[in-house]
Image (cartoon, rainbow, N blue to C red; front, side, top):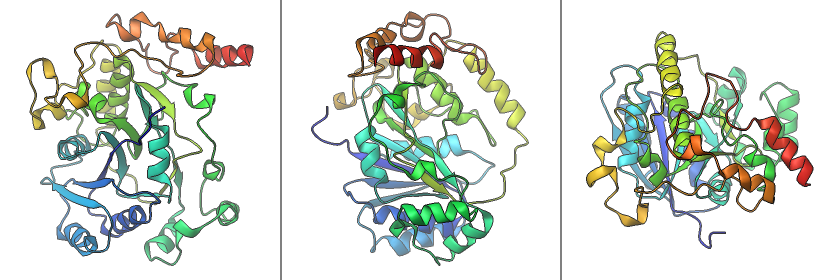
Length: 345
């Protein structure tokens, strides 16, 4: 176990949603830990977003940076990469500018953080009417208890209640270690050294869709496995109209190509913004040496049989693509893993 929690950089992507961003930044000021930094990755917003950030500087208890690029369509991958280039922390947490973290969000992400894993957080969707109440600051969600959330669920204000209930660092968090589906960058924790090792987000994804799945596929292929953040680090997703999805079919085709390949690094990624020595290794030795494959221990201190799952030559030694076509099982299916757990326990 780590003696000290990792230093955290929170990357918040946003575009012309100043009221929502104001709530997200204010919620981070109410966290029960400090010492983290926030980087607002702005995909070309107008001056209202800048005004929100400047108005909060004297009121918040964390360092904040505003990274901006001209708007030229939906370029979330690019602006997130640029945000990471400014990050000082050794652990990255990605949020969207309309996802509100609860009071222990950062602390619980720090507790879940583990070498050779990324944390797949989840979200709770707010209804349109409840979103308007929250945006008008008629309710203070950070002070809500379990019964408040149960009432909100019964009234249809939120789409689910159970994720609010906290569970510890249990075995179920490792069940879907090779599943890329469902991981979203509105709530994702990953070590900075691992993010850099796969060259971050692929900026060739333009328009809405699948740049987050592309990242996760390559992380898993590198040996950085999924750890489930459900029942620990939910975020509250404010309702908004759907983004323009005109390029979704094109992006989906790109994702399929990555899944059927053996590629680990993004074609056009974060490394262009960071100074590197030959072979793409970071200059800062503290960030890790990727001249060798990391020794993946998918289940840490779990039962003996589960540790055998670390021996996956296709996944860790650069063999054929570890993920079969969209949705099909990998080397071990979740059902096989569950059976191993049942047999051991």
